[in-house]
Image (cartoon, rainbow, N blue to C red):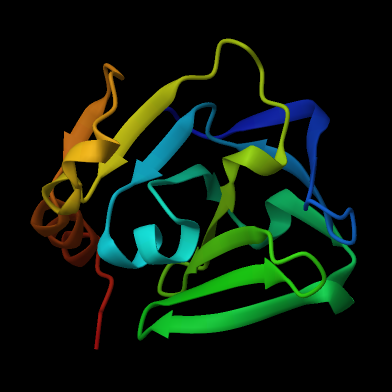
Length: 151
């Protein structure tokens, strides 16, 4: 996976109704795809996201229209209270954010960088991307090796 890069100008994204605007100044160039059961239930399919974002890497307008939901011991998910657009997934132990890729007009050369929880992927979600693919066990092992505690 690529390291985060500074974006000039920042990427600007919006929810469907425009009540929430997000500006990313630093992010990993590329798209991460999560096939886990929770992401599929939340997004209706694989969760395509921009990843490697910290609190200092984005600016938010319309915070009053954001609702967060604690989906597990280690994660929160946010959506717009006006239109229901999914906004981000926050991995709490690292304080990192994954923003919904569809909120942004991405550079044409950004491709799928990594697919995770491929062992939970249903047959209809098979993608043709040439990307790194990891099972849920591999993802969790890497997180634990990095020192993250899942309670």
